[in-house]
Length: 180
Image 1: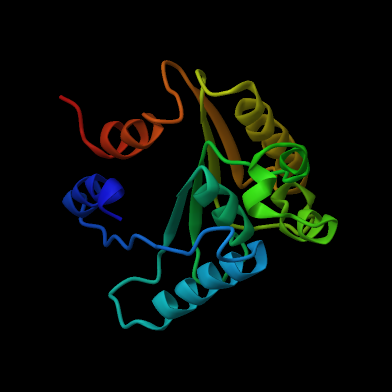
Image 2: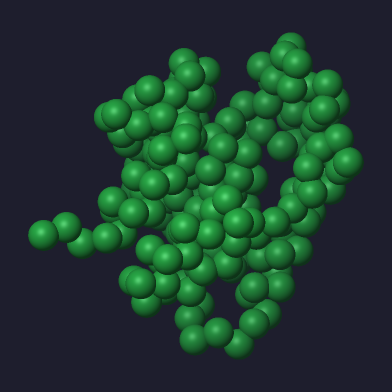
């Protein structure tokens, strides 16, 4: 969490509450167990007596993938997805699958691009223009897929001069901080 603590400064300075979710990683946990942890965290947040019912879910990289899977969760009022993977199938052919050990079932179950249900709440997909081609392609493909399902709710932006390691700063600091 300490790697992402800088996020809280910008969020709190804009009079918003901030919760940084932590979850176990593969190979210690399966994809299904990780998804369940995020669902349970959102359930817990929803049950708290906070002064807002508005929860913006923001996820980066694997967090964007998990956030995309949580779009229909009743606690989520809107979402921001930053440089995520939305189709798990290509991972099966890479070294990443050594840790993830994704089955065909898990790829079908946990690939957001395959979800056909409408999500009637705003969500935005951002990707850095200097990202890996795979991340740019996945973000664009996911956007086009969701645009066909949720034309009034989804948006996409490819951010110039931005890559995987500075997109969080770009989103949280530059977009939330008023510039004079």
